[in-house]
Length: 464
Image (cartoon, rainbow, N blue to C red; front, side, top):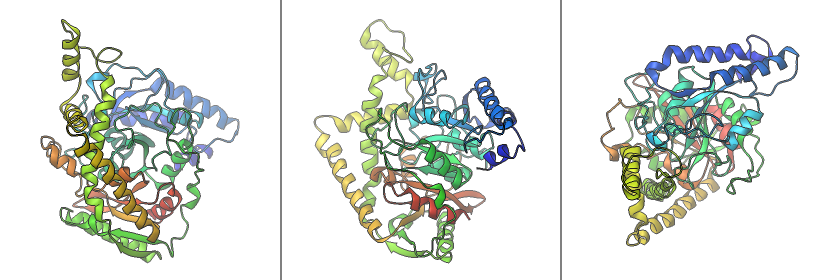
């Protein structure tokens, strides 16, 4: 991490680094709208502690003194956690999420909470109660979602790195649209404790960074077993050492289904060029098929909506969050959820409630669970033949603000290449691969669950 190297060499202090971030936020964020809240006083206090260690020539860790922004769906003690919603606009988190505890232990300097699609429901950054985030590359375009603020903040140099969450591509989509690196680990690598749940069997904390190595450093710092999250794994994580290693002899699969109708020609050309670059570096390119991947989008939107409707049932105006004025309890429930949630959240709650209802449970929810298993089997068979898969991340480059906002189906179809990794629970990373019509295009790499070492090895080669 170049920021770490600069601190060690005393080229600048941690306080100066934090100040540079806050200066950039004050200069750019009125237009970008990447941040919901800032933690300036605490950030300077934490940075000063690191500077004292450096001045005493005490060795510091690779994240100590490094500014990081946090998606506003992740709890940081004493700081607002809004999830981009009116429902939680004034909610202050009483504790740190496990990933935040680990970052604080590593000495990272938290500078603020970033804007996002409401409750992580969106692919454009436009559904936030606090207004849409804009793409730093082109302010007339979306930055992608739902981790829109985190991606925009990194791309605009308002922070060194940022955390997001990825349920169906919410880290990888904005990484591709903003021209940065976005990483989602295997399901179970990062604890979900302290993360407001959208769809519990899909959600994972991810990272948004400028380089593949920075993603690896953050991943190693946050991964591991957590007693508060029984889905977490205790498998060891060592990935940074893989970056820069030779990929000669590795087999890279190219799934035919990811290059079908609907893919923008410019995006396709950039990804094919990335494939050629990996082949020149000694990788063997293998054409493969994932025949049941065509069901991934349907499976995702059924299961995700079902889980979201269940998870958001707790937001009823009784215990915490927004509460509407009403004459009786039933009216309070109805008005609170009607006024507190935005259109997209209400849409998904209704869809989820429908597929879980007694008359449709077997036809939709149960069938989607069965199809999910078959999709996982397709990936398992593919990884018996290849080490890694490469594909487009998004079917197009960043679209204009408002272009798809009133067309939910068009917005959902934008996730067609990203949701499969969440359905299968496998890791995926997006690396900038070039541009089409002067807009960034990211290449998506995927590997077998818990084989992130291979993923970072190939990602490092593509980045070079």
